[in-house]
Length: 258
Image: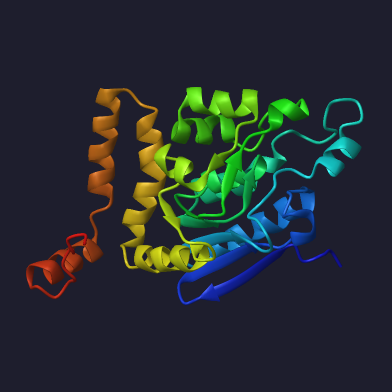
């Protein structure tokens, strides 16, 4: 029986998925990717939102370099090159939104996994980096696409060329995470946000997570056209129920920030 490298708990409508390889700082190997893919697939079938976190002292230290060294004996992986991106892509553009809870090392493939989620919460111990340049490799989990859209190409280039690490407050300032919380509170905050997301119309959540990144890649005119199509697509009987509840003052009102 293979080692259990992923934990999975369904808490109400939220699927809570944990990277569970703490002795290896949750470094991604083939089995961890496979089990994460299975967990994300399951979450898409039975939950309205997912939360991704890491067990142990950090979220994820990156790729398992020992396994990489063993399999890349001739400088090229013997497997098809795309297997490592399936689980990340399924989170990024799958049927439900994902929130990640980040602490400690969030490095390399760990940062790529975090960038695949839609909302990122870091506690103040989190730090972020892309040391691929120092390892003689290149990002391979969608980082050049997703992380560059968060940080911008110039900042991502800086991280990859110099090995610079970002602290949690810098990551928030540079758009890499949306929330920074005190030590040990990232998972609780991520669950709180996930429960809030679950209250949205599922079709709206799907439209938000799957349309916005695609519209970003379109021209101005094409983006406006697709936005109109998606706006029409999301109208449903549930939309009318929610609008009536708001008009009848039965729905929660927006709260002005303190």
